[in-house]
Amino acid sequence: MSLDFTLDKYRELCQAAVDSKYVLLTVEAYLTTQNPPQRFIVLRHDVDRKPQRALRMARLEQKLGIKATYYFRFNKKVFQPHLIKEIANMGHEIGYHYETLDKAKGDYAKAIRIFEHELEEFRKIAEVKTICMHGNPLTKWDNRDLWTKYDFRDFGLTGEAYLSFKDIVYLSDTGRTWGGKHKVKDWLPSAACSDSKEVSEVAVTSTDDVIESIKRGELNSIYLLVHPERWSSSMLGWLMDSARDTAVNMAKRVLMLRKGCKAIGSQW
Image (tube, rainbow, N blue to C red):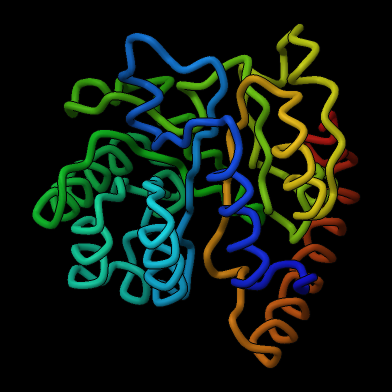
């Protein structure tokens, strides 16, 4: 059995999905399909850093016949056109991981100008039909709030990876756990208020838990967020990632204690 949060463990997760009765979908495919399958898994990747790991993950998925959605941030380390184009050429969906309210320090007019410019840069590389906010837990802005004043559909976009989903089981590896303990902004607004029994009664902490849930096939729909940066292919990388995630989780905890709040998403 492979160590959790390694590329080998991710391969086990993918193989379980491929061998199951679930149909794997990109975000765009889920949002545009007229007749969704009875059981499906939406597979999404937020590329926050270490884009080379995203490329390795995309190649692994391609070998297994899987198409996923990759959301890239717009910064010097992550926005690498040749790498993004290579992933797009594999058949994966490319999306824009926007953080413009953070960049504009809460100035909505400036934020939408940044959004438009960065979206245009992505569209020079690949078709972009969906977007996803980047949730920095250490900033006071929620980038999704941009759409309280504007409409992303005005930019020829089909959907937003948080706002366009409801009544679906959302499982994310944020905080190096599939539970909600270390999640601050990584939550679905619609699912948080859902009365769906499926959405409210999911208890997983490890990737093996997710794999077993898929094998049992007890859920009709699953929405998986996997951050490529978190899944190392070497022991040294795994140790460094583990140390970093531990430090970030501690910082989140201190921040939440100061604000007197609990981690959003703890209902999972």
